[in-house]
Image (cartoon, rainbow, N blue to C red; front, side, top):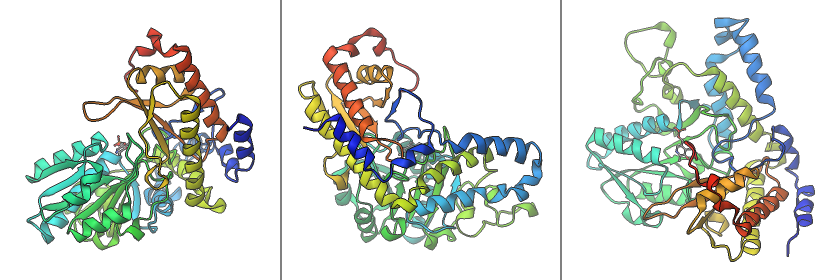
Length: 423
Ligand SMILES: *Cc1c(COP(=O)(O)O)cnc(C)c1O
């Protein structure tokens, strides 16, 4: 049987342990929600102060040139590219994940309409993140296409001569299940469809090889595993073979070939630059860069492969300890046990009390989150493990709190059943 001392020993032997020093981790908190909002990097407040007080306060509009503000989306994009198997110049930071999905879905539909106009279906997964489904519904409505939703294991079979675009989230936000990007992209291409990947729960969490998988488009989130701060800019990647073929639909001036010529006609910039729309949010972009740098700091220690190894060790430890120490309390595992199928989170379910259990844990300083189920999907107690700052001993302590909450029946207290606006 594992002990807390074993977990401490694993932390002492962990080559990635020093990376935790990069973060502000509040006293008394075990943070298992980095898949929803990454923690604050220590470098961020000073950098924001510099941008505000010096670059904005003193240098004012000159900073677009002198501080390189105008290049910031591409500079940050080039750093994110290193984490997802893309090249500098192929990926940029911009807008939100939702907006970027709209851009790439419409761009993909323009490619499809040119190359295979008989294809009029966007295929996705029923349990995909709602915003992805809503944006796809809207695009399908605009085009007179259909959005079809299937279960994860029905995707390959549904790829047929009518499917124009396969749009998937690499790691499912509810279950933590990870798709095989290489295989599904290949299947999509064999069936004549384009593949769009949402990397919201992948970038900075699991190794991604966009070029190696030959994906067509990708988007992802800046405020989860990239630690960019609440509402951080997202990112967008387009395979270079497609980038210059079509406009993206939000043809704004920042994506123009020469924005400062102020010409009346839109002429898209070459490559990924056309995926910018309006003026980038410099303060948020600066914070995102600090966040991305915390992930790149793992490069000399083995990079994403080393982070993945630790992430799998943490999620495995959590599953083992829950099984061993919380047995008989009605918890069931939703996430896959198989390493190849699991992202960096573990989801549990319980017939009753999921929401209140998470609230009781939060009151004890163990921060995870809850996602309500419906007729098809169970309630989810969700725990994200960010290998940059999560320790083995945190996993131990979190499971001990979970056990205590269940054994004592503490979660039945009325205050833990009051719903907040954000869960
Ligand atoms: C977190 C997340 C988003 C968030 O989109 P926003 O535009 O930032 O609100 C979108 N898609 C998926 C799959 C996510 O996990």
